[in-house]
Picture 1 (cartoon, rainbow, N blue to C red):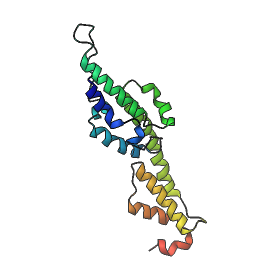
Picture 2: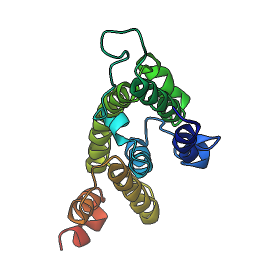
Picture 3: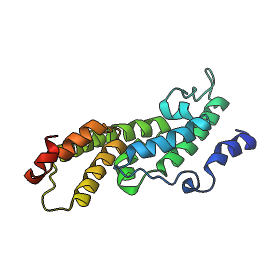
Picture 4: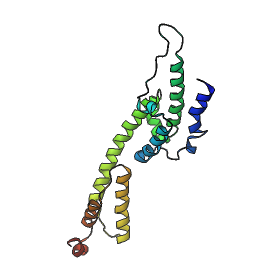
Length: 184
């Protein structure tokens, strides 16, 4: 690969991933992390490496032991990008996907599988919390704040709550003293 091409590949990543994107995937912020990462990747036209649509060329030229220059270029870019993507992971996630470090696409698929399952579980837990949460002895402000936090957590997880559902769950969690308001 020429020096210019390597410089162009590395340029968007700078000396530190944190200069590009301050969001590190920690398991609870998959949707936010993904939303920050994908535009950066598409903007530099590296999405083929990530999604597996830019296939690795054969390592050797036809029937020889000479290394294919297209393979060298693809492999170099993929490894730089793999390191960059790995650098966007918090330690708790990185430790769970270390074995998938041979290509950018393999790492991406492992992250999506791991966090997709976590995300579905988080959505279920927060939906249950939203439906079961009660005001109890809290002030109205504390109660409303907590309901909003649960709703926001669902939105971040990619499963936003409609205003109608939030109002319904909030009213259902009020004590009997609020019955005149709830029954209106």
